[in-house]
Length: 410
Image (cartoon, rainbow, N blue to C red; front, side, top):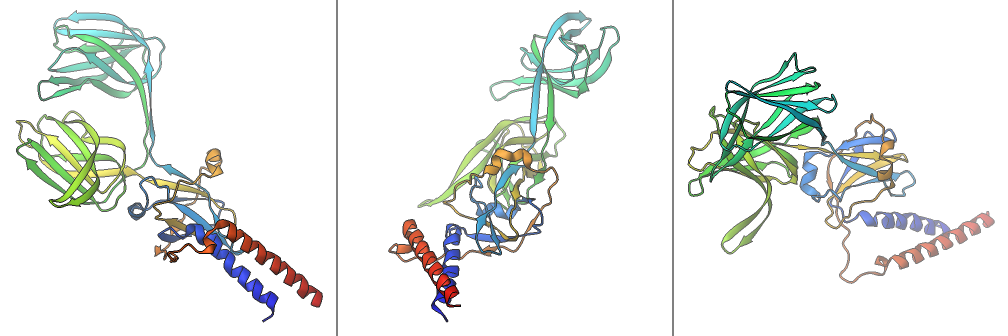
């Protein structure tokens, strides 16, 4: 084999090693299947979350085109979570009146716009009332919006709970009238009229491995330990109570942050996620900022009441999608599992509006463990970036020299 040919083979062998060096600290790779267009979407599967950083900063897509030059594929990471818009509506109280044992309050909007919620501020403690809500354009003809709607307040040494939010279908009237049924002059302080628009995301049920319920008689609590199969994002927990009685119990939700072994056994550190009230007047569905964990602890304080019968516990969360922009044809691989990786900063994030509305999804191939390159204890010369470039430059010069020489000889 001629010297020039030998140099060419050496050059083609060593460059891919340098280009792959920045990815050698990733633990797993899976091939992207179905790449055919410039834009594609990848929904992260549940088993990925067990092997990535909680911040999802160690996700990389690399492209290996026919030329063999490894490059990164830029992406934008987005959650499926929706958003809620709340807009306060201005109004005035134009009438307060008593008729028999019924008390009426009339509210006049400054401009006729759509609303769907009224928050009542009532100074009374410990009440359980029924109200009617009507709407009118001229205060002559009234239409029923909500009938026999229940509001209540419970305040004692154990509980401080109120439910005075009136939800109703979208309505657009100039006047709204609240009728407090069989109430002698309630201590009505104020109200908030709102338009609440919810663009809900795609909540996905998480696979539950087990949930165990035990009663702590000393603390008068029902404790539920919920264990999921994967370490997935969770934003909501639902509790199914089979009792058909009225109840209102303080509730807290925590997730297992970490654990460690001591001489006295394992210690578990839990981080608080939510604190509120489990009530028969509202849905037993609790939302909180996204948590990435397998184990959750739910505590229900019963005080002197009998424990509630919990029939089921569910966990849900929003998926994460990668929106990727491809350039060259070739093979593409999804890399993950690197504790030292930082969140990438691609130009793509400044041009999010360019992402098409309709994008084909790609799938992932079989997961493969990446075997790291073993390095000696003493840092070799090639680990220095400047020496690498010097060597590459020298090899390039030598390659050009022999190429010209071969051409002249021909």
